[in-house]
Image 1 (tube, rainbow, N blue to C red):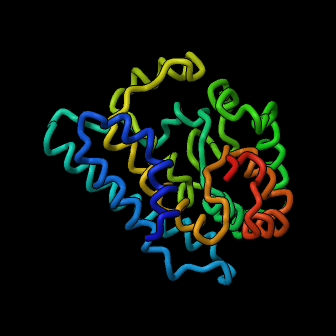
Image 2: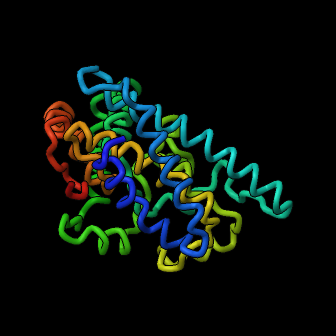
Length: 254
């Protein structure tokens, strides 16, 4: 990997290094994991018409493998550890979600394959309602105050479960009561999380970000619904801008 990839990954993982500052020996492991994610993408290039989907699917597969392995290890070390999440539970589905552009483009493709134009228009309207108040200069404030049922939540089930973002896959709880408290507080109360589990998404994000950066594409994550809205309104134009290196609505600057 070149220096640029190292720099991007170190920047993306800086908050994780801080979380594990008493275990500096783990920093290299985290970085090596992200570098491996980056290296594994070298054959996926922007000239492929399904570039975004291929990146998203690769990220999901890698995340799922890592996630299952880490959860298995934690369960072996702590037999009392149990994931409380279950089908029909949607207490976390009103939370702010950070996504990568490639995930969002992939979700849009999935919707185009499954839904009618009218159904997609209704989803766009719901995205617009949840994205109201978004300010690119105050993303952190927007995310902290955000509380809106996800437009893809139908009868307490995720209607895009097959292609749901990695953040959603990584968002688990081992304490249902804490989830209820958080929901009732409109997310002002946080849910305790296992750090080793929660950083799995960051390793994927860092590796994919570094790869995209090497191509001159903004690989920063974005606020889900502001970006989803833009892509649903103008998929081709938004995709062209992204490949050209522009920062998209809802996305952090390069």
